[in-house]
Image (cartoon, rainbow over all chains, first blue to last red; front, side, top):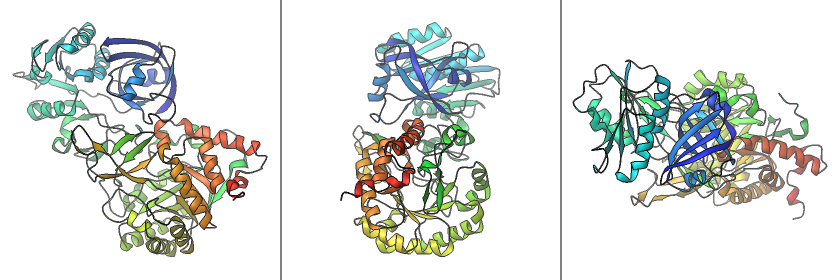
Amino acid sequence: MIRDHDSRLAAKEEVSPGIWHLTFECPEIASAALPGNFVLIKPARGSAPLLRRPLGVLDADAAKGTIEVLFRVVGQGTDLIAGGDVGQVFSVRGPVGGNFKDFRHGRVWAVAGTLGIAPLLFLRKKIGGFEKLFLGVGNASWKGFADWVQVRAPEMVLYSDDGSIGRKGFSIAGLEGEDLSGVSLVCCGPNPMMKALYNQYGTSCDDIQVSLEKRMGCGYGGCYGCVVDTTTGRRRICIDGPVFQAREVKWDELHL
Amino acid sequence: MSCISDSLRVNAGGVDLRVPVVIASGTWAYEDGMWQDDLARHVGAICSKAITKDPCLGNPGTRVWETPSGILNSIGLQNEGIDSFIDHRLEGLKKRGTPVMLNICMQSDEDLAYMMDRVAEVKDMVDGVELNVSCPNTDHGCMSWGVDARLTAKATEMARAKWDGPLWVKLTPQAPDIPAVARAAELAGASALVASNTWLGMAIDTKRGVPVFARRVAGLSGPAVFPLALRVVWDAAGAVKIPVIGCGGVDSADAALAMIMAGAAAVEVGASLFAGFGVLKDIHEGLEAAVARWGVKNVSELIGKARETR
Protein backbone atom coordinates (compact mmCIF):
# COMPACT_ATOMS: atom_id res chain seq x y z
CA MET A 1 0.00 0.00 0.00
CA ILE A 2 1.37 3.43 -0.89
CA ARG A 3 1.72 5.53 2.23
CA ASP A 4 3.92 8.34 3.52
CA HIS A 5 6.38 7.26 6.17
CA ASP A 6 8.47 9.51 8.39
CA SER A 7 11.89 8.02 7.79
CA ARG A 8 15.16 8.85 9.50
CA LEU A 9 18.16 9.37 7.29
CA ALA A 10 20.46 6.71 8.73
CA ALA A 11 23.54 7.04 6.52
CA LYS A 12 24.81 9.04 3.57
CA GLU A 13 27.76 8.70 1.27
CA GLU A 14 28.87 10.83 -1.66
CA VAL A 15 29.78 8.17 -4.18
CA SER A 16 31.36 10.71 -6.50
CA PRO A 17 30.80 14.45 -6.89
CA GLY A 18 27.06 15.09 -6.93
CA ILE A 19 26.06 11.42 -6.69
CA TRP A 20 24.65 10.29 -3.38
CA HIS A 21 23.87 6.98 -1.71
CA LEU A 22 21.40 7.42 1.14
CA THR A 23 19.99 4.93 3.62
CA PHE A 24 16.65 5.54 5.33
CA GLU A 25 15.05 3.74 8.24
CA CYS A 26 11.67 2.76 6.88
CA PRO A 27 10.56 -0.72 7.98
CA GLU A 28 7.20 -0.62 6.20
CA ILE A 29 8.74 0.03 2.79
CA ALA A 30 11.77 -2.16 3.51
CA SER A 31 9.59 -5.21 4.02
CA ALA A 32 7.40 -4.59 0.97
CA ALA A 33 9.72 -3.19 -1.71
CA LEU A 34 10.57 -5.24 -4.79
CA PRO A 35 13.18 -4.57 -7.48
CA GLY A 36 11.78 -1.96 -9.83
CA ASN A 37 9.71 -0.21 -7.15
CA PHE A 38 10.49 3.38 -6.32
CA VAL A 39 9.87 5.82 -3.52
CA LEU A 40 9.01 9.52 -3.55
CA ILE A 41 10.93 11.61 -1.07
CA LYS A 42 9.75 15.03 0.10
CA PRO A 43 12.84 17.26 -0.06
CA ALA A 44 11.65 19.56 2.70
CA ARG A 45 8.66 20.21 4.90
CA GLY A 46 6.16 22.72 3.59
CA SER A 47 5.47 23.68 0.02
CA ALA A 48 8.89 24.67 -1.30
CA PRO A 49 9.35 22.52 -3.21
CA LEU A 50 5.84 21.11 -3.33
CA LEU A 51 6.42 17.79 -5.05
CA ARG A 52 8.26 14.65 -4.04
CA ARG A 53 11.24 13.31 -5.95
CA PRO A 54 10.85 9.79 -7.38
CA LEU A 55 13.91 7.62 -6.76
CA GLY A 56 14.33 3.94 -7.60
CA VAL A 57 14.95 1.61 -4.68
CA LEU A 58 18.62 0.58 -4.69
CA ASP A 59 18.21 -1.90 -1.88
CA ALA A 60 15.74 -2.86 0.82
CA ASP A 61 16.60 -4.83 3.92
CA ALA A 62 13.53 -6.08 5.75
CA ALA A 63 15.57 -7.35 8.69
CA LYS A 64 17.24 -4.01 9.27
CA GLY A 65 14.18 -2.02 8.24
CA THR A 66 16.17 0.12 5.83
CA ILE A 67 15.92 1.19 2.24
CA GLU A 68 18.64 2.71 0.10
CA VAL A 69 18.55 5.09 -2.84
CA LEU A 70 21.19 6.30 -5.27
CA PHE A 71 20.75 9.57 -7.17
CA ARG A 72 22.43 12.51 -8.78
CA VAL A 73 21.78 16.09 -7.71
CA VAL A 74 19.99 17.70 -10.65
CA GLY A 75 18.03 20.52 -9.03
CA GLN A 76 16.65 22.04 -5.89
CA GLY A 77 14.81 18.94 -4.69
CA THR A 78 17.63 16.44 -5.02
CA ASP A 79 20.03 19.03 -3.59
CA LEU A 80 17.89 19.32 -0.46
CA ILE A 81 17.67 15.54 -0.07
CA ALA A 82 21.42 15.12 -0.54
CA GLY A 83 22.02 17.92 1.94
CA GLY A 84 20.05 16.22 4.70
CA ASP A 85 21.84 15.47 7.94
CA VAL A 86 22.10 11.95 9.26
CA GLY A 87 19.30 11.70 11.79
CA GLN A 88 17.05 14.09 9.87
CA VAL A 89 13.56 12.80 9.19
CA PHE A 90 12.21 12.84 5.65
CA SER A 91 8.76 11.85 4.46
CA VAL A 92 9.14 8.86 2.14
CA ARG A 93 6.18 7.70 0.04
CA GLY A 94 6.09 4.15 -1.16
CA PRO A 95 6.63 1.55 -2.22
CA VAL A 96 5.32 2.61 -5.62
CA GLY A 97 4.97 0.76 -8.88
CA GLY A 98 5.43 -2.67 -10.31
CA ASN A 99 8.64 -4.68 -10.48
CA PHE A 100 10.89 -6.65 -12.79
CA LYS A 101 9.34 -10.11 -12.87
CA ASP A 102 8.33 -13.30 -14.63
CA PHE A 103 11.53 -13.63 -16.59
CA ARG A 104 10.99 -15.77 -19.62
CA HIS A 105 14.55 -17.04 -19.51
CA GLY A 106 16.93 -18.10 -16.77
CA ARG A 107 19.71 -15.95 -18.25
CA VAL A 108 19.20 -12.30 -17.30
CA TRP A 109 21.30 -9.53 -18.81
CA ALA A 110 21.15 -5.91 -17.70
CA VAL A 111 21.74 -2.65 -19.53
CA ALA A 112 21.96 0.56 -17.51
CA GLY A 113 22.47 4.22 -18.24
CA THR A 114 24.15 6.05 -15.34
CA LEU A 115 21.80 6.21 -12.32
CA GLY A 116 19.48 3.70 -14.00
CA ILE A 117 21.73 1.14 -12.35
CA ALA A 118 19.95 1.67 -9.01
CA PRO A 119 16.89 -0.60 -9.40
CA LEU A 120 19.00 -3.07 -11.37
CA LEU A 121 21.39 -3.51 -8.43
CA PHE A 122 18.39 -4.34 -6.25
CA LEU A 123 17.26 -6.91 -8.81
CA ARG A 124 20.80 -8.27 -9.02
CA LYS A 125 20.77 -8.95 -5.29
CA LYS A 126 17.45 -10.80 -5.52
CA ILE A 127 18.44 -13.03 -8.43
CA GLY A 128 22.05 -13.54 -7.40
CA GLY A 129 23.82 -11.70 -10.19
CA PHE A 130 23.45 -10.96 -13.87
CA GLU A 131 25.01 -13.08 -16.54
CA LYS A 132 26.05 -9.83 -18.16
CA LEU A 133 25.76 -6.20 -17.08
CA PHE A 134 26.58 -3.17 -19.20
CA LEU A 135 26.76 0.30 -17.70
CA GLY A 136 27.04 3.48 -19.70
CA VAL A 137 28.31 6.85 -18.46
CA GLY A 138 29.27 10.12 -20.09
CA ASN A 139 32.99 10.41 -19.46
CA ALA A 140 35.78 9.95 -16.94
CA SER A 141 34.11 12.32 -14.48
CA TRP A 142 31.91 9.33 -13.63
CA LYS A 143 34.86 7.16 -12.57
CA GLY A 144 34.06 7.21 -8.85
CA PHE A 145 30.50 6.17 -9.59
CA ALA A 146 31.62 3.42 -11.97
CA ASP A 147 34.09 2.08 -9.41
CA TRP A 148 31.37 2.07 -6.78
CA VAL A 149 29.11 0.01 -9.04
CA GLN A 150 31.96 -2.35 -9.96
CA VAL A 151 32.46 -3.27 -6.31
CA ARG A 152 28.80 -4.25 -6.05
CA ALA A 153 28.57 -5.91 -9.45
CA PRO A 154 31.93 -7.33 -10.54
CA GLU A 155 30.43 -8.55 -13.83
CA MET A 156 29.81 -4.94 -14.91
CA VAL A 157 31.31 -3.87 -18.24
CA LEU A 158 31.71 -0.11 -18.50
CA TYR A 159 31.10 2.10 -21.52
CA SER A 160 31.55 5.84 -21.81
CA ASP A 161 30.32 8.17 -24.52
CA ASP A 162 33.79 9.58 -25.20
CA GLY A 163 35.81 6.46 -24.43
CA SER A 164 37.72 8.18 -21.61
CA ILE A 165 36.89 5.30 -19.25
CA GLY A 166 35.83 1.76 -20.14
CA ARG A 167 34.94 0.97 -23.72
CA LYS A 168 33.85 3.73 -26.09
CA GLY A 169 30.16 3.88 -26.87
CA PHE A 170 26.74 3.52 -25.28
CA SER A 171 25.98 0.65 -22.94
CA ILE A 172 23.70 -1.03 -25.49
CA ALA A 173 26.84 -1.60 -27.59
CA GLY A 174 27.47 -4.50 -25.21
CA LEU A 175 24.70 -6.40 -26.96
CA GLU A 176 26.21 -6.15 -30.44
CA GLY A 177 26.71 -9.51 -32.12
CA GLU A 178 25.24 -11.40 -29.18
CA ASP A 179 22.65 -14.16 -29.51
CA LEU A 180 19.77 -12.92 -27.37
CA SER A 181 17.34 -15.71 -28.17
CA GLY A 182 17.58 -17.28 -24.72
CA VAL A 183 18.12 -14.10 -22.75
CA SER A 184 15.84 -11.86 -20.71
CA LEU A 185 16.96 -8.24 -20.84
CA VAL A 186 16.35 -5.65 -18.13
CA CYS A 187 17.06 -2.02 -18.87
CA CYS A 188 16.93 1.24 -16.95
CA GLY A 189 18.30 4.57 -18.07
CA PRO A 190 17.35 7.57 -20.16
CA ASN A 191 14.29 6.91 -22.30
CA PRO A 192 16.18 7.51 -25.60
CA MET A 193 18.63 4.76 -24.63
CA MET A 194 15.83 2.30 -24.00
CA LYS A 195 14.12 3.28 -27.22
CA ALA A 196 17.35 2.62 -29.13
CA LEU A 197 17.73 -0.71 -27.38
CA TYR A 198 14.23 -1.78 -28.36
CA ASN A 199 14.65 -0.59 -31.94
CA GLN A 200 17.82 -2.67 -32.32
CA TYR A 201 16.99 -5.77 -30.31
CA GLY A 202 13.20 -5.86 -30.05
CA THR A 203 12.97 -8.61 -32.65
CA SER A 204 15.90 -10.73 -31.48
CA CYS A 205 15.01 -10.71 -27.77
CA ASP A 206 11.52 -11.75 -26.68
CA ASP A 207 11.71 -10.50 -23.08
CA ILE A 208 12.91 -6.94 -22.65
CA GLN A 209 11.77 -5.28 -19.43
CA VAL A 210 12.35 -1.54 -19.27
CA SER A 211 11.87 0.90 -16.42
CA LEU A 212 10.55 4.22 -17.75
CA GLU A 213 10.79 7.68 -16.26
CA LYS A 214 8.77 10.86 -16.62
CA ARG A 215 7.92 13.90 -14.55
CA MET A 216 5.44 12.90 -11.87
CA GLY A 217 2.79 14.70 -9.89
CA CYS A 218 1.29 12.46 -7.24
CA GLY A 219 3.09 9.12 -7.50
CA TYR A 220 -0.02 7.12 -6.57
CA GLY A 221 -1.98 6.96 -9.79
CA GLY A 222 -4.26 9.89 -9.10
CA CYS A 223 -3.18 12.71 -11.38
CA TYR A 224 -2.35 10.94 -14.67
CA GLY A 225 0.61 13.27 -15.05
CA CYS A 226 3.12 10.57 -16.02
CA VAL A 227 1.39 8.56 -18.73
CA VAL A 228 3.02 6.67 -21.60
CA ASP A 229 1.38 5.38 -24.75
CA THR A 230 1.26 1.59 -24.81
CA THR A 231 -0.43 -1.12 -26.83
CA THR A 232 -3.10 -1.22 -24.12
CA GLY A 233 -3.68 2.53 -24.00
CA ARG A 234 -2.22 5.51 -22.22
CA ARG A 235 -0.95 4.15 -18.91
CA ARG A 236 0.51 5.65 -15.77
CA ILE A 237 4.24 5.11 -15.35
CA CYS A 238 3.96 5.47 -11.57
CA ILE A 239 1.65 2.59 -10.76
CA ASP A 240 0.97 0.77 -14.05
CA GLY A 241 4.77 0.82 -14.56
CA PRO A 242 7.46 1.90 -14.17
CA VAL A 243 8.50 -1.51 -15.52
CA PHE A 244 6.96 -2.36 -18.89
CA GLN A 245 7.62 -4.99 -21.50
CA ALA A 246 9.43 -2.98 -24.18
CA ARG A 247 7.13 -4.32 -26.90
CA GLU A 248 4.14 -2.76 -25.08
CA VAL A 249 5.58 0.74 -25.28
CA LYS A 250 4.79 2.93 -28.29
CA TRP A 251 8.30 4.26 -28.48
CA ASP A 252 7.71 6.63 -31.37
CA GLU A 253 5.10 8.47 -29.33
CA LEU A 254 7.17 8.56 -26.15
CA HIS A 255 7.95 12.12 -25.14
CA LEU A 256 11.71 12.02 -24.78
CA MET B 1 -12.43 3.59 12.84
CA SER B 2 -11.84 6.35 15.29
CA CYS B 3 -14.76 7.97 17.03
CA ILE B 4 -15.85 10.91 14.95
CA SER B 5 -17.90 13.55 16.64
CA ASP B 6 -20.49 15.57 14.80
CA SER B 7 -18.68 18.84 15.41
CA LEU B 8 -17.41 18.87 11.83
CA ARG B 9 -20.50 17.47 10.12
CA VAL B 10 -21.89 19.83 7.49
CA ASN B 11 -24.41 19.62 4.72
CA ALA B 12 -22.92 20.84 1.47
CA GLY B 13 -25.76 21.31 -0.95
CA GLY B 14 -27.43 18.04 -0.02
CA VAL B 15 -24.27 16.05 0.54
CA ASP B 16 -23.77 15.02 4.15
CA LEU B 17 -20.08 15.51 4.91
CA ARG B 18 -19.00 14.07 8.26
CA VAL B 19 -15.77 16.02 7.77
CA PRO B 20 -15.85 19.22 5.68
CA VAL B 21 -12.93 18.05 3.57
CA VAL B 22 -13.41 16.76 0.04
CA ILE B 23 -10.76 15.30 -2.23
CA ALA B 24 -10.65 17.39 -5.40
CA SER B 25 -11.28 15.88 -8.80
CA GLY B 26 -8.28 14.42 -10.56
CA THR B 27 -6.10 14.06 -7.49
CA TRP B 28 -7.02 10.63 -6.14
CA ALA B 29 -6.73 7.09 -7.49
CA TYR B 30 -9.43 4.48 -7.76
CA GLU B 31 -7.09 1.71 -6.60
CA ASP B 32 -8.13 -0.07 -3.38
CA GLY B 33 -5.19 1.00 -1.27
CA MET B 34 -6.15 4.64 -1.53
CA TRP B 35 -9.59 4.11 0.02
CA GLN B 36 -8.55 2.49 3.28
CA ASP B 37 -9.83 3.89 6.53
CA ASP B 38 -6.55 5.40 7.72
CA LEU B 39 -6.95 8.04 5.01
CA ALA B 40 -10.67 7.88 4.18
CA ARG B 41 -11.78 8.68 7.71
CA HIS B 42 -10.37 12.17 7.34
CA VAL B 43 -12.49 13.07 4.31
CA GLY B 44 -16.17 13.71 3.81
CA ALA B 45 -16.35 12.90 0.11
CA ILE B 46 -14.20 12.20 -2.91
CA CYS B 47 -14.73 13.77 -6.33
CA SER B 48 -14.19 11.42 -9.25
CA LYS B 49 -11.74 12.23 -11.97
CA ALA B 50 -13.50 14.30 -14.62
CA ILE B 51 -15.82 12.10 -16.67
CA THR B 52 -16.62 12.89 -20.29
CA LYS B 53 -19.21 11.39 -22.62
CA ASP B 54 -16.70 9.49 -24.70
CA PRO B 55 -13.39 7.96 -23.61
CA CYS B 56 -10.70 10.63 -23.65
CA LEU B 57 -6.96 10.10 -24.15
CA GLY B 58 -5.97 13.40 -22.62
CA ASN B 59 -3.09 15.56 -23.73
CA PRO B 60 0.24 14.38 -25.19
CA GLY B 61 3.67 15.32 -23.93
CA THR B 62 4.57 16.78 -20.56
CA ARG B 63 1.55 16.97 -18.30
CA VAL B 64 2.86 18.28 -14.99
CA TRP B 65 5.42 20.95 -14.11
CA GLU B 66 6.42 22.08 -10.67
CA THR B 67 6.30 25.80 -9.90
CA PRO B 68 7.13 27.70 -6.71
CA SER B 69 4.77 26.14 -4.14
CA GLY B 70 2.56 24.94 -6.95
CA ILE B 71 2.04 22.64 -9.88
CA LEU B 72 0.90 23.29 -13.42
CA ASN B 73 -1.05 20.48 -15.03
CA SER B 74 -2.28 19.79 -18.51
CA ILE B 75 -3.79 16.34 -18.15
CA GLY B 76 -6.63 17.00 -20.56
CA LEU B 77 -9.38 14.90 -18.96
CA GLN B 78 -7.96 11.44 -19.62
CA ASN B 79 -10.77 9.09 -18.63
CA GLU B 80 -12.70 6.04 -19.74
CA GLY B 81 -15.98 7.80 -20.58
CA ILE B 82 -19.30 7.81 -18.72
CA ASP B 83 -20.54 4.42 -19.96
CA SER B 84 -17.46 2.53 -18.83
CA PHE B 85 -17.36 4.47 -15.57
CA ILE B 86 -20.94 3.59 -14.71
CA ASP B 87 -20.79 0.03 -15.99
CA HIS B 88 -17.43 -0.97 -14.54
CA ARG B 89 -16.33 1.38 -11.80
CA LEU B 90 -19.18 3.07 -9.96
CA GLU B 91 -20.38 0.04 -8.00
CA GLY B 92 -16.89 -0.66 -6.70
CA LEU B 93 -16.46 2.94 -5.56
CA LYS B 94 -19.87 3.04 -3.92
CA LYS B 95 -19.05 -0.03 -1.82
CA ARG B 96 -16.08 1.69 -0.24
CA GLY B 97 -18.31 3.85 1.90
CA THR B 98 -16.98 7.34 1.19
CA PRO B 99 -19.47 9.53 -0.72
CA VAL B 100 -18.43 9.98 -4.33
CA MET B 101 -19.22 13.09 -6.36
CA LEU B 102 -19.26 12.47 -10.10
CA ASN B 103 -17.29 15.22 -11.81
CA ILE B 104 -19.07 15.68 -15.13
CA CYS B 105 -17.39 17.57 -17.95
CA MET B 106 -18.94 18.22 -21.35
CA GLN B 107 -18.09 19.67 -24.72
CA SER B 108 -21.68 20.18 -25.86
CA ASP B 109 -25.33 20.25 -24.84
CA GLU B 110 -25.70 16.77 -26.27
CA ASP B 111 -22.82 15.44 -24.19
CA LEU B 112 -24.33 16.85 -21.04
CA ALA B 113 -27.81 15.52 -21.77
CA TYR B 114 -26.45 12.04 -22.45
CA MET B 115 -24.29 11.98 -19.32
CA MET B 116 -27.02 13.27 -17.03
CA ASP B 117 -29.43 10.67 -18.41
CA ARG B 118 -26.89 7.99 -17.58
CA VAL B 119 -26.34 9.41 -14.09
CA ALA B 120 -30.09 9.54 -13.49
CA GLU B 121 -30.36 5.85 -14.42
CA VAL B 122 -28.09 4.97 -11.50
CA LYS B 123 -29.42 7.59 -9.13
CA ASP B 124 -29.23 5.38 -6.06
CA MET B 125 -25.52 4.83 -6.59
CA VAL B 126 -24.59 8.51 -6.94
CA ASP B 127 -24.09 10.80 -3.98
CA GLY B 128 -23.94 13.91 -6.11
CA VAL B 129 -22.77 15.57 -9.28
CA GLU B 130 -19.97 18.10 -9.53
CA LEU B 131 -20.60 19.91 -12.79
CA ASN B 132 -17.24 20.85 -14.24
CA VAL B 133 -17.60 24.05 -16.25
CA SER B 134 -14.04 25.01 -15.53
CA CYS B 135 -11.33 22.64 -16.78
CA PRO B 136 -8.80 24.81 -18.67
CA ASN B 137 -7.01 21.94 -20.39
CA THR B 138 -9.05 21.09 -23.48
CA ASP B 139 -9.56 22.79 -26.81
CA HIS B 140 -13.29 22.21 -26.76
CA GLY B 141 -15.80 23.21 -24.15
CA CYS B 142 -15.51 22.93 -20.42
CA MET B 143 -13.99 26.22 -19.24
CA SER B 144 -15.77 28.11 -22.02
CA TRP B 145 -19.00 27.37 -20.16
CA GLY B 146 -17.75 28.67 -16.86
CA VAL B 147 -16.31 32.01 -17.93
CA ASP B 148 -19.75 33.13 -19.05
CA ALA B 149 -22.66 33.56 -16.64
CA ARG B 150 -25.25 32.82 -19.30
CA LEU B 151 -23.57 29.58 -20.38
CA THR B 152 -22.97 28.55 -16.76
CA ALA B 153 -26.69 28.99 -16.16
CA LYS B 154 -27.55 27.02 -19.28
CA ALA B 155 -25.34 24.08 -18.30
CA THR B 156 -26.64 24.10 -14.75
CA GLU B 157 -30.26 24.22 -15.92
CA MET B 158 -29.71 21.32 -18.27
CA ALA B 159 -28.11 19.23 -15.55
CA ARG B 160 -30.79 20.15 -13.06
CA ALA B 161 -33.56 19.19 -15.46
CA LYS B 162 -32.34 15.62 -15.44
CA TRP B 163 -31.03 15.31 -11.88
CA ASP B 164 -32.75 16.30 -8.66
CA GLY B 165 -29.93 15.28 -6.36
CA PRO B 166 -27.01 17.31 -5.04
CA LEU B 167 -25.55 19.43 -7.84
CA TRP B 168 -22.30 21.26 -7.21
CA VAL B 169 -21.07 23.59 -9.93
CA LYS B 170 -17.30 23.96 -10.07
CA LEU B 171 -16.44 27.50 -11.12
CA THR B 172 -13.42 28.80 -12.96
CA PRO B 173 -11.33 31.67 -11.59
CA GLN B 174 -10.94 32.81 -15.20
CA ALA B 175 -14.52 34.10 -15.08
CA PRO B 176 -14.26 37.90 -15.20
CA ASP B 177 -17.23 38.36 -12.88
CA ILE B 178 -17.26 35.67 -10.17
CA PRO B 179 -20.38 36.96 -8.36
CA ALA B 180 -22.33 37.02 -11.62
CA VAL B 181 -21.40 33.46 -12.51
CA ALA B 182 -22.07 32.29 -8.96
CA ARG B 183 -25.53 33.86 -8.95
CA ALA B 184 -26.29 32.46 -12.39
CA ALA B 185 -25.48 28.94 -11.22
CA GLU B 186 -27.55 29.37 -8.07
CA LEU B 187 -30.57 30.68 -9.97
CA ALA B 188 -30.27 27.82 -12.44
CA GLY B 189 -30.54 25.22 -9.73
CA ALA B 190 -27.09 24.53 -8.32
CA SER B 191 -27.22 23.24 -4.75
CA ALA B 192 -23.62 24.30 -4.02
CA LEU B 193 -20.67 25.94 -5.75
CA VAL B 194 -17.05 24.89 -5.79
CA ALA B 195 -14.72 27.89 -5.90
CA SER B 196 -12.70 27.10 -7.81
CA ASN B 197 -10.80 25.18 -10.48
CA THR B 198 -7.18 25.94 -11.54
CA TRP B 199 -5.66 29.18 -12.73
CA LEU B 200 -4.59 29.41 -16.35
CA GLY B 201 -0.83 29.60 -16.57
CA MET B 202 2.08 28.39 -18.67
CA ALA B 203 5.73 27.40 -18.56
CA ILE B 204 8.63 27.68 -20.99
CA ASP B 205 11.36 25.07 -21.29
CA THR B 206 14.30 27.44 -21.49
CA LYS B 207 16.77 24.69 -22.38
CA ARG B 208 14.87 23.92 -25.57
CA GLY B 209 13.25 27.31 -26.07
CA VAL B 210 9.72 25.96 -26.36
CA PRO B 211 6.56 25.90 -24.27
CA VAL B 212 6.54 23.00 -21.81
CA PHE B 213 3.00 21.95 -22.62
CA ALA B 214 1.66 20.80 -25.97
CA ARG B 215 -1.36 23.07 -25.53
CA ARG B 216 0.96 25.84 -24.23
CA VAL B 217 -1.35 26.67 -21.33
CA ALA B 218 -2.00 24.66 -18.19
CA GLY B 219 -3.83 24.93 -14.88
CA LEU B 220 -2.02 26.12 -11.76
CA SER B 221 -2.88 24.72 -8.35
CA GLY B 222 -1.19 24.20 -5.00
CA PRO B 223 -0.48 26.54 -2.09
CA ALA B 224 0.74 29.20 -4.53
CA VAL B 225 -2.86 29.95 -5.51
CA PHE B 226 -4.37 29.92 -2.02
CA PRO B 227 -4.74 33.71 -1.55
CA LEU B 228 -6.28 33.93 -5.03
CA ALA B 229 -8.70 31.10 -4.28
CA LEU B 230 -9.63 32.68 -0.97
CA ARG B 231 -10.68 35.83 -2.80
CA VAL B 232 -12.81 33.78 -5.19
CA VAL B 233 -14.48 32.05 -2.23
CA TRP B 234 -15.17 35.41 -0.62
CA ASP B 235 -16.68 36.83 -3.80
CA ALA B 236 -18.78 33.73 -4.54
CA ALA B 237 -20.01 33.31 -0.98
CA GLY B 238 -21.02 36.96 -0.88
CA ALA B 239 -23.15 36.54 -3.97
CA VAL B 240 -25.20 33.42 -3.15
CA LYS B 241 -27.16 31.72 -0.38
CA ILE B 242 -26.22 28.16 -1.34
CA PRO B 243 -23.08 26.63 0.20
CA VAL B 244 -19.70 27.30 -1.33
CA ILE B 245 -16.91 24.74 -1.19
CA GLY B 246 -13.48 26.36 -1.17
CA CYS B 247 -10.87 24.85 -3.46
CA GLY B 248 -7.37 26.02 -4.26
CA GLY B 249 -4.14 25.55 -2.37
CA VAL B 250 -5.57 24.35 0.93
CA ASP B 251 -2.63 22.69 2.68
CA SER B 252 -3.39 23.08 6.39
CA ALA B 253 -6.15 23.37 8.94
CA ASP B 254 -5.49 27.09 9.11
CA ALA B 255 -5.97 27.46 5.36
CA ALA B 256 -9.17 25.41 5.57
CA LEU B 257 -10.39 27.56 8.44
CA ALA B 258 -9.63 30.72 6.47
CA MET B 259 -11.73 29.40 3.60
CA ILE B 260 -14.55 28.60 6.02
CA MET B 261 -14.35 32.01 7.67
CA ALA B 262 -14.46 33.60 4.21
CA GLY B 263 -17.75 31.82 3.62
CA ALA B 264 -16.98 28.25 2.60
CA ALA B 265 -18.99 25.37 4.07
CA ALA B 266 -16.23 22.90 3.27
CA VAL B 267 -12.96 22.71 1.39
CA GLU B 268 -11.52 20.59 -1.35
CA VAL B 269 -7.93 19.39 -1.14
CA GLY B 270 -5.93 18.36 -4.20
CA ALA B 271 -2.32 19.23 -4.98
CA SER B 272 -1.42 19.22 -1.29
CA LEU B 273 -2.01 15.46 -1.31
CA PHE B 274 0.84 15.15 -3.79
CA ALA B 275 3.06 16.71 -1.13
CA GLY B 276 1.74 14.52 1.68
CA PHE B 277 -1.28 12.48 2.72
CA GLY B 278 -0.87 13.82 6.26
CA VAL B 279 -2.64 17.01 5.21
CA LEU B 280 -5.98 15.18 5.57
CA LYS B 281 -5.42 14.24 9.21
CA ASP B 282 -3.91 17.66 9.94
CA ILE B 283 -6.97 19.47 8.59
CA HIS B 284 -9.40 17.10 10.29
CA GLU B 285 -7.78 17.43 13.69
CA GLY B 286 -7.01 21.10 13.27
CA LEU B 287 -10.64 21.92 12.48
CA GLU B 288 -11.78 19.94 15.53
CA ALA B 289 -9.39 22.03 17.62
CA ALA B 290 -10.67 25.23 16.02
CA VAL B 291 -14.26 24.33 16.89
CA ALA B 292 -13.19 23.90 20.51
CA ARG B 293 -11.09 27.06 20.49
CA TRP B 294 -13.93 29.16 19.15
CA GLY B 295 -16.39 27.62 21.62
CA VAL B 296 -18.92 26.52 19.01
CA LYS B 297 -20.73 23.22 18.70
CA ASN B 298 -20.30 22.79 14.99
CA VAL B 299 -17.88 24.11 12.43
CA SER B 300 -20.79 25.51 10.42
CA GLU B 301 -21.07 28.26 13.03
CA LEU B 302 -17.73 29.55 11.76
CA ILE B 303 -18.84 29.79 8.13
CA GLY B 304 -18.46 33.40 7.06
CA LYS B 305 -17.11 34.44 10.47
CA ALA B 306 -14.71 36.90 8.87
CA ARG B 307 -17.58 38.59 7.03
CA GLU B 308 -19.32 39.71 10.20
CA THR B 309 -17.11 42.76 10.63
CA ARG B 310 -17.49 43.91 7.05
